Image (cartoon, one colour):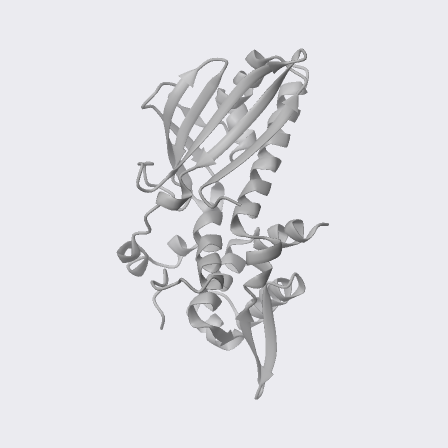
Length: 158
Length: 105
């Protein structure tokens, strides 16, 4: 299994235009990728989409491609709440929509996990709150431990 | 519940993720040691460790008067690698997107 990309898809009984609206409209995005309150979205390449994950943090995702109703992509720094996504700290999430039997085949690819850099110095200076990271940081951390390639602890060992 | 769902459920709590990460750094630790590092009680740490233990993410062994816990990495590296966990999260999000898209306006 690739460690660099995740690819999933789902068939939806609704036209691509409808699925596009769910993917990009603030009220919907807040539901499928947030805490329920509408997400702030500047829907253009280079615009920001703010994803509020409550206690896990607030993610400033960077919109890369807006091609309705076919392609929507953004960079997501899931290990770094409150930091704007860059190619060094984030993965690329790309949705593609294809018409299929009156509905839509929706595919999502999240890629670039292997290239993410972990700023150790930031972790060492961080307080308890910032240790409550999202999934990727901790799971990757434990995964690295599992594979015996963990050489730089994210947490200061007291 | 599948193994992945069990693990996902146990990891849904940020304190438990924090405990797991700290255990992976320390190698092994007691609830007392972990509680000293965190703004929560030893009893709360014990309860969280019990949840992680129940799904096989950690293993506790008696050491003197206390149980000493360590991460069981095989649970993540085999049955539920972190990529599988992330993929499962996407499945959940896609299911929500489908529900929203198929709902009548």
